Amino acid sequence: MTLRFPLLRFLPPPGAPRRLAAAQLCNSVGDGAYYVCSALYFTRVVGLSPAQIGLGLTVAWAVGSVAGVPLGSFADRRGPRGTSVLLALATAGSVASFLVIRSFWAFLLAVVCYATAQCGLAAARQALLAGVVPPGERTGVLAHLQAVLNAGLAVGAALGGLALGAGTERAYLGVFALDATSFLVCAAFLLRLPAVAPVPGREAGEPRLAVLRDRPYALVTLLNAVLLLRMPLLSLAIPLWIVERTSAPGWLVSALFVLNTVAVMLFQVRVARPVTDLGGAGRAVRRSGLVMAASCAVFALSALPGAGWAAALLLVAGAVLQVDAEMRQSAGSWQIGFSLAPDGRVGQYQGFFGTGVPVARTLGPLLLTSLLLLWGIPGWLLLGAVLLAASYAMGPAVRRAETVQRGGEPREAVVTG
Image 1: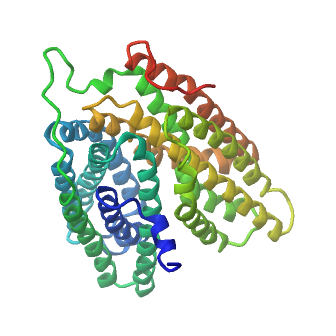
Image 2 (image 1 turned 180 degrees about the vertical axis):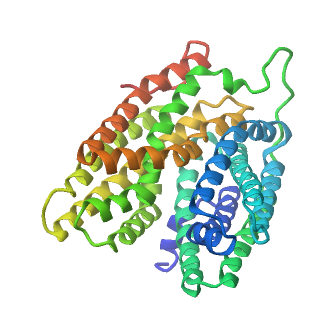
């Protein structure tokens, strides 16, 4: 019994939620290996410059963020299960194409296809989840999926590390073949889920992409994108901050990444458990803003003169606060994104809400490196203030969005604050 308990903590309930988790685990293992090796593969094997890679990824995620909405709408109209399977296969194909490309323009085309398929897949899978999981259980299932995602990324990163250690073209090609295969297996698991009936066709005069005219929902999405600026912190801004602005040892970069991954694996489900409606979501987001502001202040203090061990302790404390804020913000945003999506339009609304991720990945690195590395301690304090303000603004924005959606009468206890 004791041997089974740790595993069961990460798994969602049997049935459709567990099959979704299996699909998530498969592609996250491949993605973990891909993320570790992709930059060196494109420079050492394909022969691209860092500037070309940066430009290609920026264009790709910009296109993907725009394509997510119509692909999500397509999932609503044609059925999310079939659409998810097709987009998983498209992702596998785009990753497989990396094995043979050897020019910038081929790379650009492949990476645009990859980002488009990934953004569409994210929206279609959310619509599929909405069709097979009752509303009150969705945030809890998403928390399990996030824990499984982190576990898969950790395993994949370890496999990618072996390829980096080998440093050969064959090892890099093996990683990309693994990632492509992982999406094929993901498609197989998605195909085993129950079919979700497509929504009826549009009524006369109804816009094709109604979410683009939903200004209250657009404001909620914008605030969520601001809160997601935390995403490039751990992967880019904090590593550069440690090396250039503190006396802490460089190996701490890896330690903080492991700390974040393990914390999400262990505690995301527990943190998300109280979030079952918009009221709980609003409280989670507000608390995440407070904790994130405290985290930014602690990170700022790590640059003060002193011993390396003192800076390291401050960085660890800041990382603990940061992952706590991340888990609260994730749980709150999942509930908000689903609760405000009208029935029959979950795909397109989730596609629009999900644009915060590629926007944060595209604009976040430039904004955060400029703010933190050029401004230093004042930059951290400003970042904390912006995130705190966005978290508190989410409450009125959600209240307005729900009131408009329900025709002036909120359906459930809405966010206060």
